[in-house]
Figure 1 (cartoon, protein in one colour):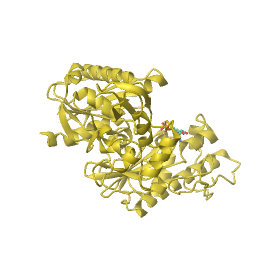
Figure 2 (figure 1 turned 120 degrees about the vertical axis):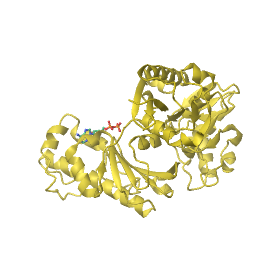
Figure 3 (figure 1 turned 135 degrees about the vertical axis):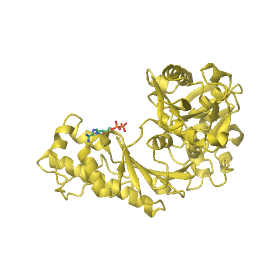
Figure 4 (figure 1 turned 135 degrees about the horizontal axis):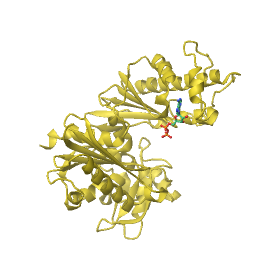
Length: 421
Ligand code: ADP
């Protein structure tokens, strides 16, 4: 196999992962360091131990001497405060932690324009404003920024993808003035560069973890963007559906697509934009109705050539964001056939209908129609559902190159290696 030239580090909820790619983009090394418990998931010291363990394991799997670039992705919206010496102070707030201070959420909502992804109860900016008030806090960083800063030994930087939910203005390419009205001095946020942008060389702490002197650090991205890139999708029209607990569609587009009512925002990645939306529907409905054990037996009895015509919209409770935006939207799971295989088929037909509607909605909002589709998540394992989806969507299905975000981040580095030369 080839020589490792690009490394991606992924800071996820379950642990740290590292992937090394050769110049042809083939995977030549992979390592994982799971977190021991939920406390480690939100511990910067544990993140760093994970990075250190992964790079050591990676070096054992493949020599790192020829690595020319490395980037880090992290969970989107996870923030921490650091002091003047860049040491963490106070608690980490994870991407799914509500901001503990309702007044801060209200201040962000009052200051932010209606179209801003920084609004709402799950606002990354609200978490950042709150943390900036911790005693001794000098700056607020995203998870990936803190790792990047340590590896580089340079001033903290972030990337447009991590900055989006913190309120960064992609048109103006600046932290907007209204962030001050939301309660945060913009000087306390890191400078922002494009995802994947070549930065400086590895610093002493990075070299101590085995990175060669010529290894350049690159601006990172979010785990969501990295997971998209990992599949091999990148060009406008290339789509990825994630069939996990929720149904999430993502699509590369030549233009940004923004529709706050549907929870849709676009990330800039390379020359394209990554637009996506998440339905409340998905595999969680399958799990609640059928469990996990019977799925193979039920799948064997599906008859996709005879659609049930039941027109379900599977949801666990009322309310949908995308592809329909209606907080009171009613689930449709009736009438229930006596045969559970027919019931299962109707649920899968309903989910395939939601997926097709999701891509039509993105197209209405200005995205391209899909030219190809890759699938990730637990539902990708069901070959009969896949056939039903191929029929409903009418676009060629391609295998995902990888489902590891670390591979996507390494691919982002690889795509920018020439730019740093
Ligand atoms: P998560 O989003 O929680 O990481 P996964 O990607 O692991 O989820 O996918 C789990 C989901 O996939 C579950 O909701 C499960 O019901 C669904 N699933 C697993 N196997 C199948 C199958 N053979 N057919 C349909 N759905 C499946």
